[in-house]
Amino acid sequence: MKITEISGTGIPVEGNDIDTDRIIPARYLKEITFTNMGKYAFYDERHDSKGELRPHPFNDHKYDGAKILIVNKNFGCGSSREHAPQAILRHGIKAVVGESFAEIFAGNCTMLGAPTVTMDEREVIDLMAAVRANPGTSIRLSLVHRTVTYSGKTVPIHIADVVQKALTEGTWDSTRLMLENMEKVRTTAGRIPYLNRFQAAEG
Image (cartoon, rainbow, N blue to C red; front, side, top):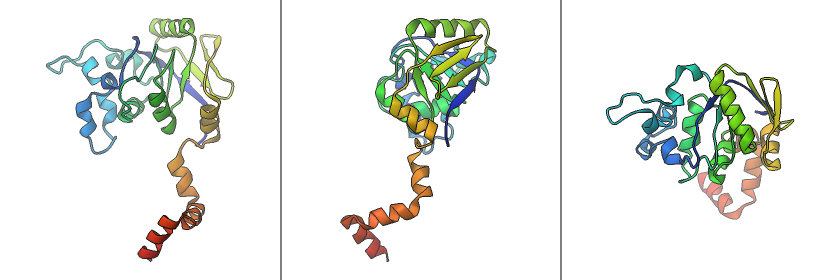
């Protein structure tokens, strides 16, 4: 699937160095599948010790349905758990805009088809302020033009060329590509000695 543009409302989560343990607490890594990860996103940030809701953007109904998460510096630092982007995506987020990202977190997002793009600090602050003032603000993220547009304003974004190419050409989903080209996979595997022996044994 080619991903060239994402549009929708935004949700700001302020703070630098928000790590993957805050995004998805370690105790939820025991889940067998990623199916329920969305409800655990920022769980300990959103609930007190008794399980009661605390003030947090992910608890605020004015941000319901938001597709674009807006963050600050070094978002997704810490452990390399894939559960963190899975939790965010399964909560309904389709893209993350921020000042900077931990490299592994950003890579995991790309492999799931979720762009992580950066903007200058001042532009991120302005976008957060616009969304807080009007949660219904429509945001359009163009990977083709490398821009974010909102409230009549267009701002340049930064995204690595290889990531932009993978998303816009639809080559980010390696599993799907392999399944769609299974004959080529089998042919290639047949030329690899140790794989060829396994195939012969199965036959």
